[in-house]
Every structure is written in C-alpha cells, then in structure tokens.
Length: 414
Image (cartoon, rainbow, N blue to C red; front, side, top):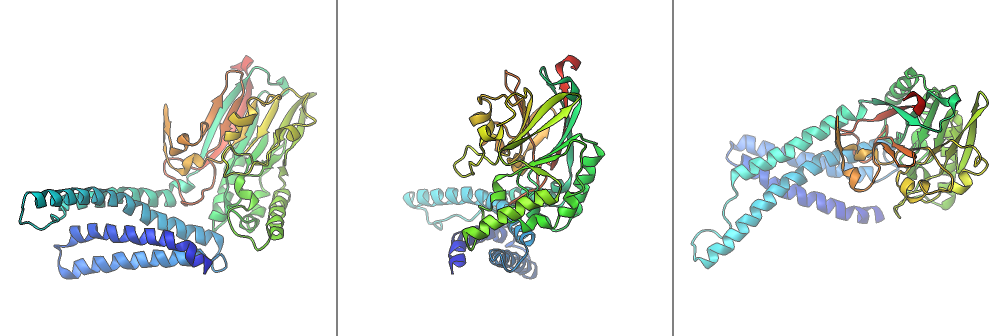
C-alpha cells in the first residue's frame, strides 16, 4: 500500500502530461482519415499504458533485476521529457486562447469562448518533442557507451624527480547496477590496460545502491592491473542510502559486501586512509577519504585529518575524494597540501556540450568544478572525471563516458 501511495504523485504527473500532449496529437491528426487517426490515438495510449505499467513493476524491487528496473525508468524519461517540452508550446497557445476568449466576452463577440487551437502551434510542439526524443534515444543507444579516453599532462614544480612521467588512469562512477551485461566493462578495462598506466584510481560510486549490482562484475574488475597498484574509494551511492532496507543490520551488511568487492577485485580501498609509494628513494603519498559532500543531501564521512595521518612529512600528495565540492569546502585550505585531487560524482550531468574552447552542462550551476582540470594559484589542482557509467537516464548526451589518463610532469620539462 505504501508503494502505491508513493507512486500517486509521479503517476498523476505522468497522466496529466499524457492527456495534455494528447491534445497536440488530436490537433495535428484530427483531419486525417478515421482509420489512420484512431490508429495513432490507440498506439499513443497503448505506449502510455505500457510505460505506466512498467513504472508500477519497477517500483517493486522483488519483481525485476535492478538493471531492468533502472532501464524501465529511463525509457519512461525518454517519453516523458519530450512530451513535457512539447506541452510548453500548447500551454502558451492555451493561454493565448484564454486571453482571446476573455477579450471576446468584453467585446461582445458571438464566437465560441475559446478559439480553436492553431495547427502550426501543435506542429511546433510535435517538432519540439521530437528533437529531444531522438536525441535521448541516441544517447541511450550510442553516446552512453562511446567511451572517451581523455589524456592530459599535469605539471608541478614540486614533483619528486622519480615520479616525473608517472601515468595515472582514473575511472569513476561505474554505477554497475545500470548495466545488464559485462560487455561494457570488459571494453573499458581493455581500453585502460591499452594505456599501460603506472597507477589506477577508482573514485567512487561502484553501485547505484546495492552490493549485488557489482558482484556480477568482479571477474572483470580483477583484470584491472597496474605496476604500482589499483586504489579506490567510496562514493555517496555506495553507502546504500537510496533505498529501503529491512533493518540497519541489513544495510551494514550490504556495505561490508561492497567493501569485500573492492578487496576481491584486487583494489586497495582507502577509507580515510593512505598508502606510500617509493621509487628510487623518493616517496609519494596516496590519500583516500570516504565521501564528503558540501550539500546536506550527501554523506559527510570523509575525515581529512585521519586520512593524512602518518604521511604529513611526505611533501607530495595525491588525494582521492569522490565529491568535488569537498575541494573548495575543506581540501584547498587544509593544513596539508594536496597537489592533485581526483574526483567524480557530477557525471557532467550526462548532458552538455563540449567542443574545443567551450564546454557547458547544467552541472556547472551546481558544482564549481564539474568536469576536467581546475587549478588554484598555489598550484593545487583537481581533476573531475565525467564518470564511466550512468544513473537515472541510462544514456548520455554530449558528455560521453570517460577514462582519464593523467601524466604527472615536472615543470622543468614543460
């Protein structure tokens, strides 16, 4: 019963938009032969009924696998958002009709109170809905799986000589619950290994909510190897905060299972902890914090003081912190200097525009650092990975999944 009550508002919104957008369908196809017209009407409502039924089914975690539920929700978005955009045109038209009707009353007009809808406005609404519909379908079929390998040299004036040329691969936000097969991750692992990195960092959100989502892929994750190791941290989704649990004990058990996945995969999970790499007598510290987000909606489990304990005397530090809002809030002004921070979390909103010399995404209005490399005047830098997986909408538009390859270089070689 509680599930049904939770669905009343989203279902009511879906139905309201469906009914409103149907007025566009009626206006555009109203003059067609009856057989064609009613065929289109029936198809429209069959699709809507299937989507609403799928939403009911996907709300019950016991009926369908997680990745199937997420996919159904994504399909719902692909239909709902374009109809919502198209309905904006109809809303503007109806406001015009209403005002015209009021004016007609005062002028003593004998015409019907509401003038008929103009066909060209409804045609514009169809086009306005069609463009995002096609784009979102393409994002699910192609862009969401078109892995981009972004390579960048990052220069430091205090990089120990032994680490000049160190190559680091970063991945983030796998959201493995959104994938039904191992093929995508196998491809990603192969692309990473082709780059022959010295180190591999994973910066959180292995799952959407449950450890079982990632357990299917452990044999693939085990293939990630690097001479100096594979290091990982937790993201906000890894704590299991986005779904009901029968008991606190079940939630804690899920988190432990997820930590075990990191270990079984051969990754060194840093939980407010650190590790030291030594080459030719010189040392570099790798520090990893648990999730810390500036927003009140995200966990604040990261403890920088604890994470850096024991490596204070090592001058060059690499920090793994899932949420980039942590950088402005605590990292930049910390007593210890972290030359380079690796983050993810934003996904680049899975939507945006990136062309040479220009990048934009709605993510920029929420996160000051949302994709790519950022630098402070004192030389501290942060790289925000756009994520490898996806959540919510099972695709990407203009922001492809990312594997980052950062090469650390001394400014002497710049």
